[in-house]
Length: 347
Ligand code: NAD
Image: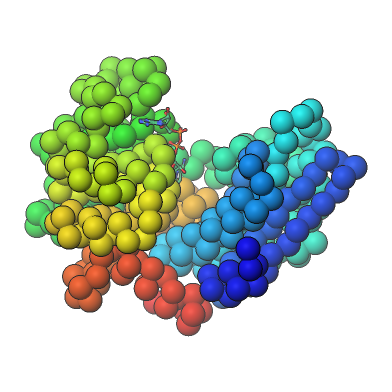
């Protein structure tokens, strides 16, 4: 990999490689941009197949955070850190404390939080060695109710854009993945009288939504091809590709999963098929918007919740720009984010 070329191409500011053999720790902190504020993004703890895979993940995820924060109008930049896990025995506290020490050295340029493989309790441990660990047990709490709310607001905006009304009563929504985000999205949709079709590979997760919200279960391999008004991917990334798009029957795609498009060009493939796609990082910004607002900007919970609800306006702005510039919404969102990052201004 030509590292500097890759950093320049994606617009990264700084990559920090961290090592403390005495703690069994290897980590990477990627700061994509601080143009709008300190770089915010969680710590992912993962067993990577190679060092290069860890580096690519940190680079890709930190850029995604810059775009997500910029679109959410948060005066925050984008960063991400990864801890390279191993399959052998590990002293979790020692690793987390070491990671915290390296974050502290950056003096606030990077603020972390939980991500895949880390928990609020882990943030408590990191907070022993750094002031820059958010998402602690006593902080803004579980982000997923806010992420679910944000996806719901984005879906209302897409409905207004597509059908002339944001009312989702009677609309059928196929939710792929009934985990944290899927559950909270289902709750919001059930409250306004939407018809729910749900799938998960874990039967217990499906049963909960069926029992609580009267949803209909659909086989996991059929959820994206079912006849529904909206398809809401809330499980894995990369699920929108040539083969899956061919089978889609929904008019709108709006869900919480990260990195839904397998490749950027799939935004155009969806548009060509007449499917309205709400870019994932626009729809799923509720969690970071709430947490960032409460913990970094120090606004009240009510003000933070109001910011989450503004995902409605942001979604409409992106969809209208896409129409005006004749580009897919994924491209319109990227353009808006890049403009804000380049200018250092949020409006
Ligand atoms: P989760 O682990 O609680 O839920 C994911 C669910 O998807 C699990 O129940 C899992 O069994 C299910 N699943 C996996 N493969 C599946 C398949 N093939 N078909 C159907 N279901 C399948 O995770 P989550 O916190 O709900 O996050 C879901 C997605 O949203 C992830 O992509 C995550 O990165 C993204 N996201 C989450 C948040 C948040 O606040 N939790 C914020 C932004 C983005």
